Image (cartoon, rainbow over the protein chains, first blue to last red):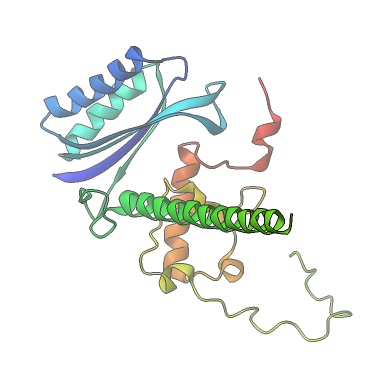
Length: 151
Length: 91
């Protein structure tokens, strides 16, 4: 059983229930053949770097799963004939996949480490902004206090 | 090449091995190369979408190979462009 990661792009005009239906369809294709789906991520509609099938946007879905190599061929075959899936890519994860422990950056796969670093960076930026705002507001308050004292 | 080969009339002696930059990934053990993280991959592609050479970005050989693989995977799945002129074509 090897760990694979599969990203596929769903046609952008498929929305809402249809979208979840497609995602569930592929999840069942995998689990019916004895694959264990570890993670499903829906990135939503994003702009593509180049046009695919004349579309400039697409809905990205990420699957991480444990499976036998024979399952992959069937999985990709089904995606190839599905017209709503406009692009797909399956990658073997050599280091396996470690499920993250409640948003802690210690034990994590590449995805989670990157996500956590990104979150930490964003949190740091937000904290910095708030600190700057706090300083500015206290400075403004001090100025206001001084002017009232003078008057 | 960009700097015109044997043109030595200006600039004096050729630069010795450029900058001795440290590989970003060797220095920071936690930094992983993931084709899905295009924000960090963007540092390693030029404006036209070309992969920057190792002597410019300062990465070590091993990480440059992994970077290249990640960038090519990202290109395959339309996270990164193959070339800058994609955006000019419409319809």
